[in-house]
Image 1: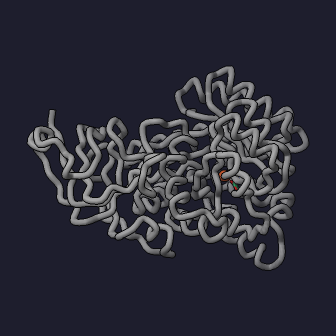
Image 2: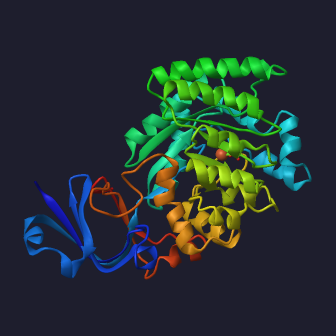
Image 3: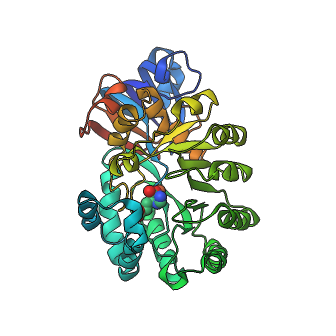
Length: 404
Ligand code: NIG
Ligand code: FE
């Protein structure tokens, strides 16, 4: 067994209930065994016998070490962009108006259908590399811009290929119920039938890790979402929901009934919705990029989430319409500045709680037995990661035990 030792660092382990904020260990040492953390602690406590067994050694030169960052909500795979709509909005149109006129998600659906798999891989790969440059080691990618079997399949295959071609683990989510495609205009229930058929087939092809839907006036009703969730349950797939983004449809309560991994956006979440999420153990995924980009004014009820002890995650929501963003560090800042999360809550939101939002129990904290995914940063204190705008103090990423 070959062990690798990392010393001369401070480690923000993000362990819950630790004595220090951020689970911070001064003068830390990490011992890596293959792709797994074998030992994490203060260097003076490292057993001499364990130190002797380390055949490879790294001096982290005083870096701060955090768990690898986890972006738990992205629509990273899509064709084209929506800069033109950005311009329209700046000339007075609203996001909902543009959507009703056949723009919005529908325009990205056209561009995504037109793009070949190779082209999608190229465009999405550039975005992925933006995230990786800031220390992302796990990310979720949703479909939902194909909205027809061949194109949903293409997007999910591209998502899988991105994971295979880069030092990152990609978790795929089927978001067939994202918008009504033009072929089904005026027939949402018939489209939901088609979503169920696509889900069965794509799951059979091993392309689906979880199922999401967009529950909103401009998208799918709670009754329609329920049918999708019922089908996911039959297949043993976990669910999550775009809930209460533009209005309160009690989507969180619906998702909670299905034991959802997460409910995401949540600007309009009610007290009852927060309580339901707490009871179900669902994570609240906050997406400050979309809030900012749409210039929303209704803040997600962070105080209620805290009171109900709902774990809070933070993510980019990387997508062309509401958050064309490939910086998770910028989201840390926005979560603090716009939503008033503390820097410690924000960092937990892209590590421990983001792992939970994906149903992953083997990462998100630095501890023995966890995956050896971690990032070395050129900062003194963890708050610097959420403090700076547009800085990237990443020194190195270790992915599954190896320097990426
Ligand atoms: O997460 N809310 C729904 N879906 C995306 C936006 C999709 C789009 O506008 O292209 C979101 O905000
Ligand atoms: Fe989204």
